[in-house]
Image 1 (cartoon, rainbow, N blue to C red):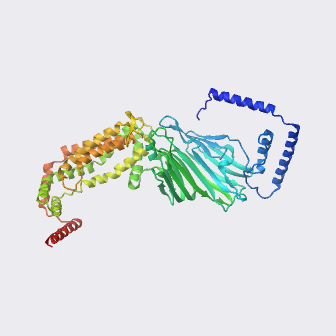
Image 2 (image 1 turned 90 degrees about the vertical axis):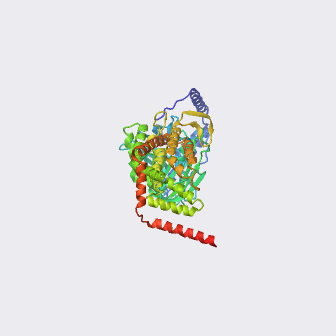
Image 3 (image 1 turned 135 degrees about the vertical axis):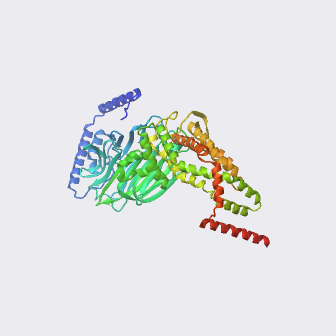
Length: 624
C-alpha cells in the first residue's frame, strides 16, 4: 500500500478547519425553543419507527429525504439515525481495502464498487505502479425500478461494509440496507496471491420492493489507463474481447473511432489494456449485452493518459423475486501462465494469439517453448536460441527453395532462347516454356511453396512477441524493454510513420533483410525480365525500407528475432550454395530428366489443352 504524505499546506488547512469547527460548535448553542422543537421531532420519528415495525408489507425503497434543516447539527444526526424509515440507510463516504500479496483493491461505501485496483508487482514505463482503476476512470452498478416506479441507481446508494475472514480468504460484504433484514449486497471474496476475486450480487427482503416487470440493468464502464512508452503501440493491442454464444471469442475493432455490438449468451467480458486486463466473468451467462469501444488516442504523445473507453450494458434476472448473480472480477496481467489457474473460466482465450493455425502455433508451441528457455536463460538470449531452433527446423524448406532457384538458373539459357524465338507470340512462348519445365522436371512454383509453408511460423511469431507478457520490461543489450521499442537517439521532431526516436534493432534487421534479399533475388532478377513480372530490384530496396519504418515503434524483441533470423538464413543459404548444391550435377540431372518420357498429370493436361484451344482460336480469328 502506498504511503500517503501530507505537505505543510495540508497540515495548516486541517488545523484551520478543525479550529473553525470547534468555534462553530462552541458558538452554536441551541435555544430553549429549538430544544423543544427537536424533542417534538424526535418523538415523531420514534412513532414513525414503531409504525414501520408493525407493518406486514415490506417498505418501499426511496431516496427521498425528510424536510429538515441541514444546518442544524442535531437535526442532521436525528435524520441519519431515522432515515431507515424513508429508504436505504446512510453511511459515511469512506473506503475499505482488500489486498493480498499481488493485488490491492479499494472499495467505496458509496456505490459499493471498486474505485482503485493496483498491481503490486508491476510498474509502468515511467516507474509508476500499474493501476487498472483509479481517479474515477471506472464505474459499475445496477439500475432498477421500485414498485412505485422510481428508478434507483446503486452508484447513489451508501453501502455498509463488513470485513471478515473465510479461512485464508478475505470477505467484504457491502450492504445497502433498508433494514437489517432487507438489503442489497455486494460480496467480494479475495484469495491469497490471486488476481481473481469472487463477486456476488444478491438481495434479501426486496421481493416486494423491486418491480419485477422492469429490467434490472447492470452497467460497467472503464477508460483504459496508459501503461506503455508508445501509446499507439499499446493501443493496437488494447481491445474489448468477450466470450459469447457457446464459447465463441470475439473482439471489437482496434482502430475505429467507435465500435458497437450487441451479443447474446455472454460468459465473460475482458477490457484488455495490452499487458493487463480488467475482466468480469459470470457463472450465469448474460443473456444479451450491448458493447461499445471508443478510441481515445489522437496522436503519439506522452501527454495521452488513456487508450480506449469501454462501455457495457446488460440485464440480470430476478430469482424468486430476489437478485442472485455469482460473478468474478479479474484485475491482473494478461499472462497465459496466470490465466491457466482459471481454466474453468477460459480467460486464456482473451489473449490475442492470432487466428486459426497461427494462434494454435503461437499458443501451444512458441509460448511454452519460450517459457522453458527463459526459465534458465536471460530473455534476450532465449529469443536468440529460439530463433536458431526455428531456423534450423525450417532449413529443409530453405534448401528446397534454393534448389528450385538453382534449377531455374540452369534452365535460364534455354528460357532466354524461347523468349527470343517466340517474342511476338506470348501464348506460344508460354506453351513452350511449360513444356520445357515439364521435360526438365522443374516447377516454377516449387520455389514459392516452401515460402508459403513458412508463413504460419512467421505470422505466429509476429503475434507472439507483442503479446508475450514475459518480455515486458526485460532488458537486453541497449534495449531497456524487449516488449517496447529500443532507443539510441531521440529526435527533436516526429517523422510521419516513423516516430520521434531512432531504434537500432529495426536498422540491423533491415540491413540483414537487404543482404538476404540480395542473395535470394539476385538470380531471380536475371531470369524475370519478362513483361508483366514484378521488378525484383525495386522490391529488394522497398522491403528493408518498409521494415525500418514499420518496426521502429514495435517491440524490440520482434526486431531482434528478425535480425537474428535473417543472419541465420543467410548463413544457411551460403552453406547450401557453396557446400551442398552442385550446379553441374543439377544440370546433368535436368538433361537426364529430359530424356525420360514424361507423363502429364491431370492438371498439366488440362492446362495444355486450354492453351492449345486458345492458340487455335487466335489463329482462326486471324484467318477471318
